Image (cartoon, rainbow, N blue to C red; front, side, top):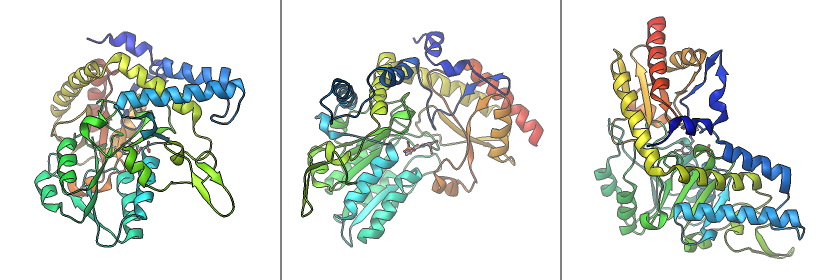
Length: 403
Ligand code: C6P
């Protein structure tokens, strides 16, 4: 059992007020809050050893380099990658996906097929559309079901010898539904297709083991898992990262440069051109440490309690519909008959409650349900039943005011 009061004390922002009310933060799917351990790491970096890495012989540069590489190893261990150089530190999930899409846009050929799921965030749709356009490849879509699950039966039928890549999120950001990625990876591999899993919404709740999954690429953002914004991870199998061309040219990613020819550095530097988000990378390592100290089993147990509690209470409200009911993480996407989600979100904000409203950068899901958007309450282990009760009363109040 987690000591919730002790955990909440780790997050100074939870003390603040919004519109004179205590903040209730249910927008963890957009970005999670930051514990003191991570904030202190950031302050320590800028106070004591701020310097560029991999470049200087001086002490500060060496200290910063050591901490940055230690963070990479923490992240490697967390995801159980075979080698630390298979962990590329990027600016986040979006950049990680673009690195792979840009690389494959020069490898794919006309007639090749790539598959995405209907449940994707725009970050896991648009880069592949751009890639397919450049390469002349065809983008195909795994349809979804009413309950927010994927039609895996239809996916199996889509796979063929021309399928080269499959992209799918581990957890849907708009609905919170968990996709059967083990099955997807196994089936795609039977046809020799590579698989990229977008773990942005899974990593705050689940600890993925990339070797056990046998996944080719796995990507995520630190800011959804108690880390800072502007940093994330691209995991790739060594041989695949070696096969792909670099994403950007610049300092740090080279071996030798002449005006006639440049040769590239090995992994991970080949994909890390320019000065990276050094402090962010180090703080990402601190966030991984923080979450592991709490323990993912504990996180899941607590978040399931919160999800069950909130779901039951919300469904007692007449006219309220929840989207995405298959197995899921602690995300509840809902609407109330005849009321625009934005209006509910605005009233909740006035009462100190932060939720996200709109299409959640997943317009195809909204089109599937024929709705403009939803109200999304994404809960974290540091939330409480009392906060849920306050939200329920606020939703009832909003319904009364807007009906
Ligand atoms: N989803 C949400 O409120 P970045 O912005 O690069 O850190 O993450 C993009 C991204 C990619 N895939 C999934 C599944 C995501 O959920 C996100 C970010 C936030 O749902 C902000 S739009």
